[in-house]
Image 1 (tube, one colour):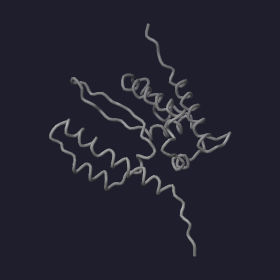
Image 2 (cartoon, one colour):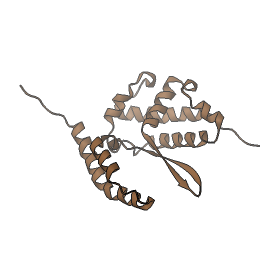
Image 3 (tube, rainbow, N blue to C red):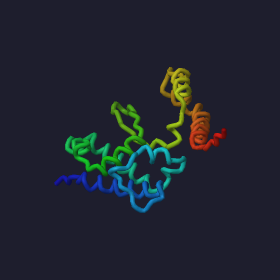
Length: 173
């Protein structure tokens, strides 16, 4: 007999993990998740923000997406109308900070999900464009090699831009 996944339990766990994460980020004991502005949380994220408890939320999100890819019932339960306001905030936050690539392997297309670290949102459009224009596309291996070669400089730029964004400037008359 095949079992079924109670998606509401999984959503509730995602919410519980997210709530603890938000309380830590905001340094508050009680937080109203339903009325929370996610921009406030996103603005408080630092490089290390995804190192602790929130990793479970990413794992839950990835599990839900993986199951939904093979189950119409689960996919339907991931529509916004099947979430409470609080569950949706948690889901939306994790969704915004999760990337996906598709890999063709042995004739099968596989989706791979991964957390997008906060610093990654600080890459400049110029750097994205430059990378896209300069990557050698003669083979899959060349593309991967060029990406890995560019990675240290891209990370340096993102970390530097994140630091600039968070730096306070005093303006005097």
